[in-house]
Length: 200
Image (cartoon, rainbow, N blue to C red; front, side, top):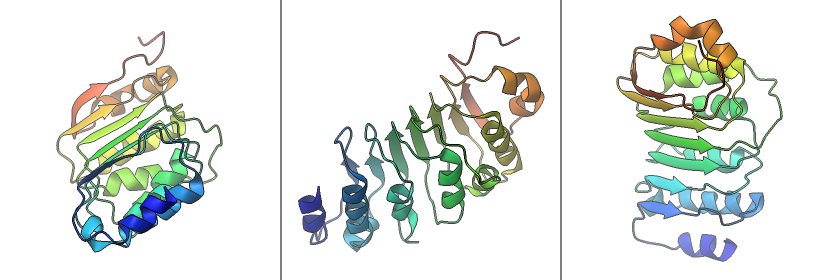
């Protein structure tokens, strides 16, 4: 990947989509690769789809660096088997020029709790373009879900959001916040399949 990163820095043509699914990428090589993407204007201003799923990414800065340049146009991002904390990830994204329309995150491996609160709500209050959000089998905590719910309720920009929370244990959250969850204004479709044994 390091050799490819070096070559990409010299590329003089646009690149719209890149798939690096299940490539056993290390933190160092991915950070270098993503740095090369944002430092090449031909790529930065054209890359809209990036698939990094199947790579056990340990640190969020490997991903958030993609949004550090205001001229990024990344619209679709795929992640799975990641090992960093989602609360911290969204806290970082909230402070960056993120233009994502479709975000797919599945199979979170991290069990590290975050000392950061409010970042999830902040991101989902501010995001303006999101159309699809998938957080499947992500071991989402009730605190995360409450912030997600409140953020989407407060968002004045989103109109038609497809939300997938399948494979998460949602029983206690739904029992506690059902009315608030069910009345999120921007929801277009909602998938909570495999969410627990007793939803009543």
